[in-house]
Length: 260
Image (cartoon, rainbow, N blue to C red; front, side):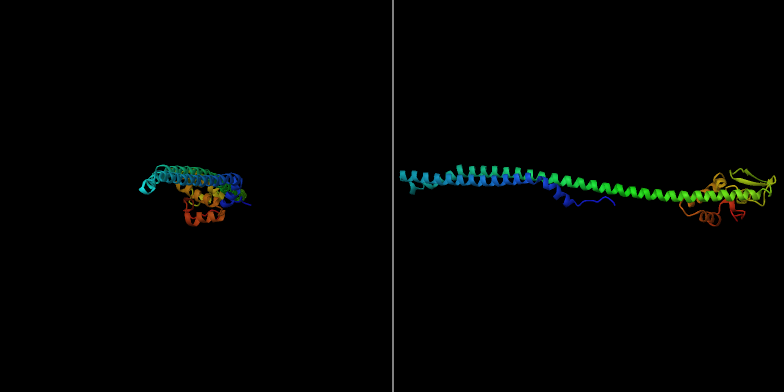
């Protein structure tokens, strides 16, 4: 069974459980910060109320409450004391909250990275497994081709042995190199008009493909076509048919097909 690739969201949930205590502490700190801020704001408002009462009382004592002095002093207290203190308090509360939320975000990032890396490991493991299955399948196919090739070689060897026995009573044939690097067949000491390379191979039990592979450029190309077809698993019969009826190597120009 191939390795399984786990779901990313499931991994996030799994890794996230270990961080639940830290999340709870951070959430508690966020709540405490908000409550403390609210209490301090209430304290500032209480101070403002008390300050207003003090100002009003002082104005009444001086008999100036209705002259406009008291309200101006209250406004000054609000702008000079209360609002700056409130702004500083709110900034402190916001900064603390931002810091705590940042810690919480770091936790979520860490959880995601662990889950992501785990899933990437799963994917790699599955890909490696798939590659190994493909390699084994390829190797099995190569082994099959090699077995078939070896069987065909053994069959050719047996056929060559039988042909050699039959050729023992035939004419004296000799193979000589020509100036092009190919072969000329000589029959009883003279250049033969009856045998081409294929006929020579048939009469003497020689391996035609081996002779082609050591011949001139056209012969070598013919041998390559044959070997490519066998290597690709198309069979010896198909390869020989291609050689005689389609690819037309030099060996068959005189009309003597291999095995005919």
